[in-house]
Image 1 (tube, each protein chain N blue to C red):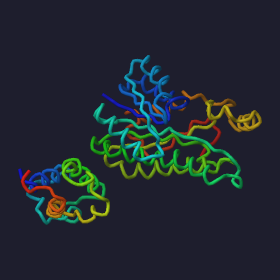
Image 2: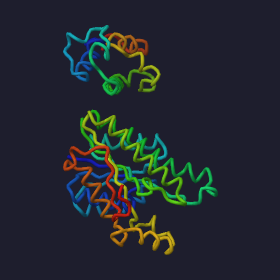
Image 3: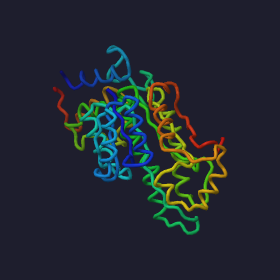
Image 4: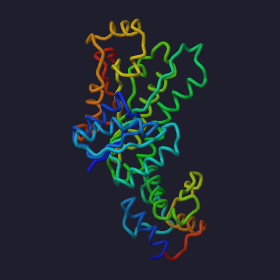
Length: 86
Length: 244
């Protein structure tokens, strides 16, 4: 499974959206109807899944604001050293 | 399977809450206090009631201590269904004579402790889409009390924390409520002078002080599914001392 596929699965589950809606550029709030609590949950799940692969096991609060889409999360995790192929 | 954590439960109201939850069928009860050995008596009495009990050393004023404790509970039991923020201290004194340290220590344990605890457990409750958090406030948090600026501020803060957290977490099935005890017979109130006790007694319509079990009963209700549609509320258990 690729990193993007894994992240996409987590997003679909958390936001209760179909795979076809969760495109790399779809904005969680504007396009997928997420609220702030959804985003907090999403970050929690990303930390649970990838925490062991990133420094400090958690995503700093100041970084979370930029995590607005599937593409943004994938790029962020790659920048933290997570491989594209899991 | 259901698991509850009760802070400050080595004795007094905290112990009564643990025992009541055990009687009501909560399977795992985590008894927390600043020293694990202080928890032994509560652990034994909970076990005698047929529930599983473990002692846990948590200093609620320290986030790292709480996070480690909550992680240990999740590892052992898989979930936290009920969290009772009961840990509290008093450092009474008149405002003009109250030290900054008296203020900070009371606010750190009574209010910051509940915030840190709520933050740590809500993460797991959100994921489970259920959970009940009960904060132990106080009648003085609602009406004020001379000589208790720090304590009453911490308890008033707990009421506001309860309501804000209830608004944030409600949509995810996590309920947050508070119980505001009046004058309850416990170690914390034993130290008051007879003069103070008599003055308080005259302000209580029911003409007597409460028992720790009276508080525990209200906590158990809020923690249970009987209160499934109750959130952001404060239940006063005060013999009529204050009627908001």
